[in-house]
Length: 327
Figure 1: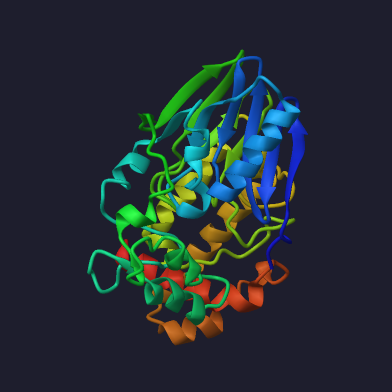
Figure 2 (figure 1 turned 90 degrees about the vertical axis):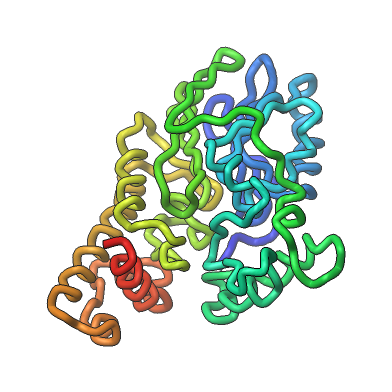
């Protein structure tokens, strides 16, 4: 399902590169004044990457780290670059690190409202929908510094660096003769995400949206739809797609997906959500039960997409629950 383990640096175009830790990717831009890095993933990977960058691009330290969003599997490890870099993120990243638990991916929430995330709260969604939601117990045990079997917000975000600079909707960064646009697309997989437009390279980078962790070589992949849809209205997911489609770029690369994609490929993800919403809303107007919807809504156009058999019904259920919440 996921890319094989391993780390590598790959060239995208011009001075832009990606580096991966298995199926998780970062992007970095090499300039005369230093390197602009998007995401750090985790401390072990960040340590490896720092060594690789020093070897390949001597005398050009990482000077800027852009945090795509606050989810731990993309944001940890920033302290490795703290000695040279300024950190930038959407204002929600700072808000989400105020000592409380923000919205976490994969339907992971503090269900018993005790102020901690425990093993069951990450593991049960994973066991209920294996490989699609939740996480393994290591997501807690690796952060459980006091050994009590759970993680407080402070423990959970101990390896995430808070941004030094935040923005609200859009920010232009000019660095090393390059222009980079930081864009908040809206609430989708996260509520604090940044899409990074490398203007000179005409490349857009986004982590977890529009390509989630299920995406490998094609964006024709049904979304995991946990949460339902990570607790954000489907109208805002669709609006996020449209905002990114309005940007001027040729290639999309992201935190997932083992090749660049085109804007047309990205638009197919919006069209899938629009189709899903339209068909579920129509069934709701007809008074169909959820069980009946799972039988009647076949999404035939998407039968050849990855995870169709496993995720057609969960997507219908998630859309139904989402549309009931966000009328």
